[in-house]
Length: 257
Image (cartoon, helix red, strand yellow):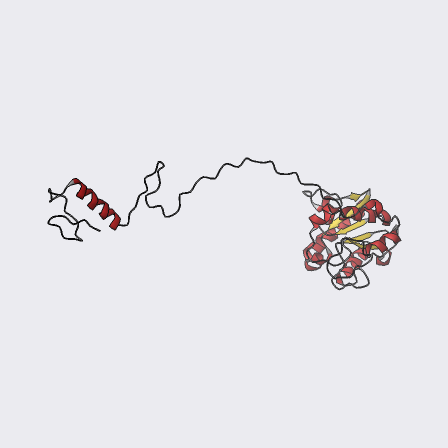
């Protein structure tokens, strides 16, 4: 509201330049009314604040003392390898039994095939998606059989095994390694006693203690048993170039052992 003074109609702003008969109090009141009509307010406090601040004054939070993060507790393996069966037949029964913690989903558990001391152990990542009673009974198994024939080994004389007991979609190999799957595989290999090992899966060398930053091709042996590591069978089936590369490596490998 504008203060009315002599000669000034209500609602009109006083002309302070032309009017000299307005008292200082009336001038001050008119000025305050003008700012109020403009919608501008200012809070006079000890600390400087923005004139047009539309929020509550923010107070800096109290400093919280830094605390050292708690050290992560080492994860215990899911399997005590010392308690695993010490015979190949006993291990096979454990592998497909309920005590094996590495079976996921509803796919059946498939036992390994072969006898102790086989000329070659064919270790794949997992059973094929359609395997029900026999390990690697589909196109992947046929590929592995052809590889054996190519290097002069009777497919029926080889030992066939998988790193997982059942077909698994997108397995977390890092977690499986922490859970002790690599130790279980090493125990399996020690019981099977193959003369040579072919690993089909680029993550299998790491499970068995190979340095993660090193290429899988540099993985040469397990407990002095010669090893050649390559891609999983499904990847080899999808990539002719990788199959050709594997053939060259197989020729070099068999010639050197």
